[in-house]
Length: 158
Image (cartoon, rainbow, N blue to C red; front, side, top):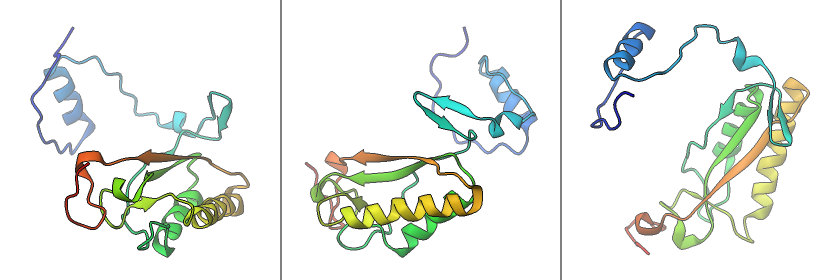
């Protein structure tokens, strides 16, 4: 079996050989392949079908407007992700309540921002269709920051 717990360590691998050496040192069984062709192959994901295996993970830009709506920087970022060809775009952490926001720039989905989110989704779809002739599968990460809430920039834990 290999290591079950390992103290957290920073890492910076400059080569695949260095990564493989650490995997061996830790006694882990992780397969490697230098053939990245699988990333371009379609994938069934439940009832959804992805054209490839490239995924945009939910990376927060913290660039919403004061009301939590995606602004121009947000829309540009997601248009670029769509134009890049990822088959799955996972929209960033989006608060479900004002007080649930981790900071004042976090997305916040509410009655007043629904139209802005609909525009973000529409622009993302259109950007992908224009370049690739298909739409990505899109999901949103809904969140509540709880004890880490800072909706106005100062700690306001719940």
